[in-house]
Amino acid sequence: MNRAEIVIIGGGVVGASVAFHLTERGVRDVLILESESRQGRGSTGAATGGVRAQFETDINIKMSLYSIDFLKNWEFDCEYDPKGYIFFATTDDQFEYLERNVRKQRELGVPDVDIVDAAEIGRIVPGMNTDDITGGSFGQHDGFVNPLAIMRGFTEGALRGGARIEFGQEATGFRVEGGRITGVETTDGMVVCDTAVVCTGAVAFELAATTGIDLPVTPQRRQIVWSRTREPLPSDLPMVIDIGTGFHFRPAREFTHAMGSGPKPPYDANRRDILFAYPDPDEPTSVSTSFDESFIAKVYERAKHRADFLYGSEVVRQKCRAGLYENTPDHHAILGGCGVDGLYFACGFSGHGVMHSPATGRALSEIILDGRASFLDVSCLSLDRFEKGEQLHETAFI
Ligand SMILES: Cc1cc2nc3c(=O)[nH]c(=O)nc-3n(C[C@H](O)[C@H](O)[C@H](O)COP(=O)(O)OP(=O)(O)OC[C@H]3O[C@@H](n4cnc5c(N)ncnc54)[C@H](O)[C@@H]3O)c2cc1C
Image 1 (cartoon, rainbow, N blue to C red):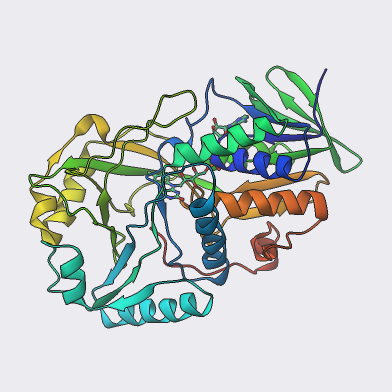
Image 2 (image 1 turned 90 degrees about the horizontal axis):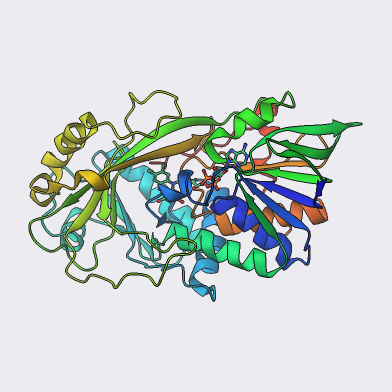
């Protein structure tokens, strides 16, 4: 019978990080179960690779500070590129909200985050219509990473530390005896273990339900339009986000740096490829990841007002894509244990799982091995916050 001390269910960026951090702490008998034939088929493969510390809540800001620092200084090259994030406001209320956030971000130690006026935004993003902009915030250490490279780095590190990964192994439930985990049931039989960590992304609620746990993680499709502009984009173009509507755009990146692939492609200084999207309020709960062509017209409608270089760009249809967000009611992750001893969750990132994967892996390793995370207090992200009515409040999500 298959056995492991700790079973990680799901081999995306989060499962890989949890495995890596456990092996860093000296646990060698770690098994990652991945239902697909290779990694990266879940949300991690669809992510656009934004990282930012510009959040509203203390916990999201602190998770980002730790994670950005980790990614910046990691010996593994995850292609951290600090091009920055601009959030812009079109009403006074939105602008005051950004001012409050910047004050808090600075208090918590976020470097180089500033309030900028419309003229400054226009200088950073030439060609953008700033007529209706009341102001914005610019975080210069925010930027871009390669999600597949992060997943690869964590996986390779975990395997070096003694972990194993098995593909085509779908977890279907748990063996629970006397209120604690004694095994994970899979399509290939039982894996005996003392500890299991659910890192199955947007479908984590399915496995939780097999032990009667109502995990408030809801899958929702997110679509991205990939286009090519007529002129080269400014080489320092940041991520640009309308805080009112969530409409955003950023230079596009090809992520071919997956497990088993060759060297990363050369950087294209003359690039014209751009991604743009917005959170469609009409998008229902579903596990659909098919790209819906009608989304293109909706996005272009929003682009029309914002910039000619966006509106005049040409869609690269074969590169448009969709993936799943894993939303929780308060748009914060669920990290830690539950009513079943030895069963842990790391899910519900609500679109921030790549950027928060370093802090998440460390937190889970400390919670499992020490009973609590000491590098950062993540207790506000526990599952029981929903029962206790202690939900968090974050509106700076896209
Ligand atoms: C369009 C889009 C853009 C995004 N952009 C960003 C961004 O800019 N920055 C950011 O930080 N985040 C972004 N995200 C969110 C990010 O992709 C996720 O938060 C993150 O990838 C979650 O990682 P994960 O490992 O938890 O989930 P996943 O990557 O989904 O991995 C879960 C794994 O579990 C496996 N699995 C599922 N069920 C089982 C089972 N029963 N047994 C075994 N294995 C199972 C799946 O095959 C999968 O490989 C974006 C998401 C989308 C869709």
